[in-house]
Image (cartoon, rainbow, N blue to C red):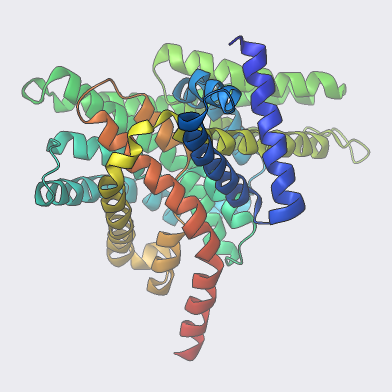
Length: 416
């Protein structure tokens, strides 16, 4: 199948699902699209077994999409830039301490705790998987997804400070989680016996701080260029080229693309390019990137649903997926509880908010993309299946019940 036909079918499928949800089902956008995509994928698998010709095009579309490459190499930079470009940096600076703690300490804690719990559960249920692969699973599934989080909390009744903390955490923890994932994967490839802590630490520092520096530097250049012209078409092209250059340069220098995109988006989005009050280029650019964000979100969640067609073995891994769902929630809860307990005065986060922060930690396409990028091994399907179950559970179940949890937590606080 040629590239244009793949794109055409993907856009057509996304538009169809979006219309069905908006016209008939009327669930929150992300949840509705993922639900429809999964139901259609299940129907496609069933029909394909009965009559392959009927489900021909959807099956071919699912099997011809390089999900991992498309998300990590192409869509990720645009999605993170769009999300950070339209975020409120003043509110983010106000909640910087809890955002930093959750996007660093909590991610590492969650990865280790989940890995240990999953390894213990695997031994209990006679699932053979080494501890190092359990840690790798924890690294790719612990970061919350900025795309999924942004879509879910947009329609929630979260207090403003918690919404800022959760969205800010999701913007930055992807970069930390991705670096952690790469570091553990390097240990697996080179062997535990050849592991050198200094090299891994250097890799971590280079990816994180190098990505942040690159994003700010290129963001500054792009900002100055956009501010020096009034032609809106040129301004849009500069902002698009900024994201593309970040992806290319960061990949070449082995720096963190997510952190570079986020830092560039924050830098350019919270500084006006308007030269006077009559000019509205900044506002128009914000609307442009909001539209890009929403369109790519829709396509990404359709792709998540389509991936079920590529997982014919998933029926054999219900136990693995169920275990993963059960363990990821306490792992996240503990990873939030620990820094809040020891840094309570600094973070200004109430213990009553821990349950909300835990339940609002939605996973998405990035976790699936990382799982799909794993080299083939006897344990790849276990990790991929577990990741898929967690992502679907978090988007649909956690997304639909988040407001209910917020109301219960609010009533409990008032009652006290």
